[in-house]
Length: 129
Image (cartoon, rainbow, N blue to C red; front, side, top):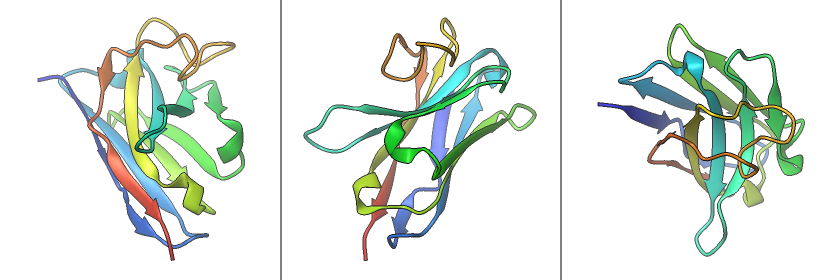
């Protein structure tokens, strides 16, 4: 069964850190660019970050630059999103997605040209004191 499963979400105080994981089963991630999206109820889904299939390029939305870091371990078939200096406005459901057609490069990134093949179910991140 093809699956992407996120983990690592939770409740954290402002200024804190979390590391999200996106683990694949039923397929190998090394042929896919992987992106992270987030969504707040009542708002559109937002692209947060992506990493190219060969891990030679990354992209971040402006609001998380310098605070979030995406990485991948193809041997573990897993992609990570290290989130630091978290703010209340980072509160959302975070989902990962695998994109086979367009890499994470140039004008192609989550929310721009992407039509992911696979999606995870999402993990809740809540930043609150």
